[in-house]
Length: 120
Image (cartoon, rainbow, N blue to C red; front, side, top):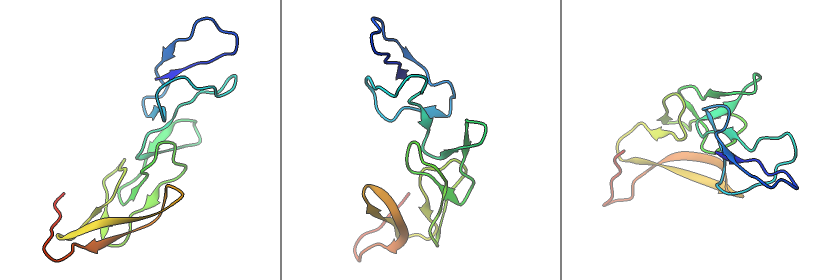
């Protein structure tokens, strides 16, 4: 839900995002400027030309709310449609993300250290 904040308004109400594939990034009151809606595509979806959201196809993902485009799953991993993450295809491997400024710059499937295992 989002709350429309209009300067000088005495009554503020929360309203569902108009598109069921959209959500807000945080709860609470936000000022986004007159005429704008603080709703963004959910993780696993990206905006399309019709001002709606479309699912990332299999083999791609979008981990963030409001992501602009779907990202390719790294080599050795896969995803289903509308995924917000990829899964390493081989047993005993896990996904490692390289973050820069809180954004995924790259990801890879790595072997679990000796004595450890990973199950999805």
